Image (tube, rainbow, N blue to C red; front, top):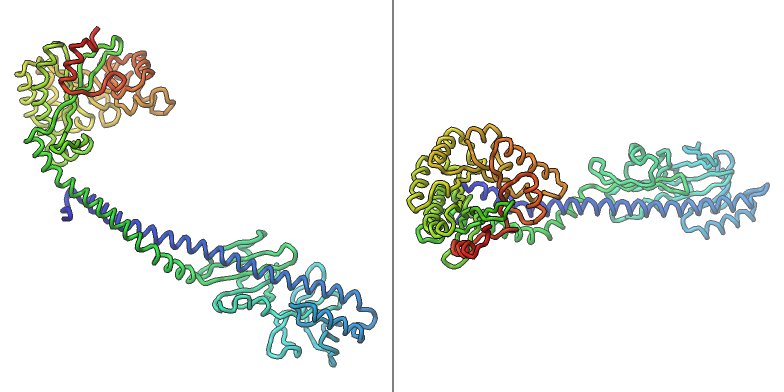
Length: 522
């Protein structure tokens, strides 16, 4: 059964979050992985185009050098025509080689050209004198465009499709090669000149430009830049395919997490009723954490701690049931049960040590409830004296200042001591301490733990100690577990402490046994 909205709305919200989080995470992971994979693939494609372009350029350069070596005074002699044919046959990526005069191709590996073929003016000239003429329509290859490179009277005819048709099955991609100045040499699809600006002087770059993933590669040997642009739709297709694979486990994780949260909410919703039952059936009991005088090691008292053992033998931690009791308005019943149990346990203990002090915790609800005074007064009928009792209030508990002030003053009028618990973690300040006329403050374990660690919060313990001394308050340090902590606290004027260094919390019978045996007695 789903929990009703109200106090449990955070659980409902959390359930929705944990259900959707794996789905959102899987979708995000699929998108990121697909994007990274597309970047890598586009990069490799541009690198492949560069390798092909450099191979073509290398063959063209070698052919031009060989033609220059045999040119002589009659470049179109039968001997040179034979050389041209041999170069052509031995060059897998060249369509033809030949000699030019001005802007006219005189002869080539295909024979004499009479009249010579006009090539037109060059569109690009590099520092070495290489001239490029692109997108030419030559009678050598009717219906196709060609690229002609001319250097020192030699000509090399190239077919752009040798580069652009590397990926014949991917007709919707942009692929090609351009000069370093941005002149397209061979390409399929529109080349964007600003892409070169993105490349700058780098060797390579990959980026998203509008609806395309673009990758550029610069040649280290020639003045060439290759480019590939793939539609981002490929990323979406790849992401959808991957997400389809991730969806079942993501749904399983989300559903399991959602079930766990809702089950927890159901348990939390049911827990108040279980607490009421536990109060009726006597499942709560007290343990006592000894409070020690640091200078002598004497046990001067103990803090009464509520514990819950269910009928099946399982334990419920205080940090679980106390917040639930507070939210459900049951904490006053729990506090009343603490006083009832203390009235049962305490007489045997004070019979051994008449001056022994018991500390009990009161909640925020207790501090604004006038009936708290009646419950404390009834505790005195068990034989305890007011001097045997210290009431501990948390800093959060004194936020209702006016009501809390009245109750705390009534407690002091009974002759009982008042201490502020977990000092330094809540809202109390110097003015509060003066208004409430407290007798002691307890230094929270969080600050005791930092002693000797060099942590910034280690200084907070000293500030609390100085405040306590200034107001002539007793100081009790909580959670002392190491000797160096105890030494530090004693050396800085802290009078009392409690923690596992001295003793763990124990049942009343164990405390009586320890006191009878002389433990904690000087």
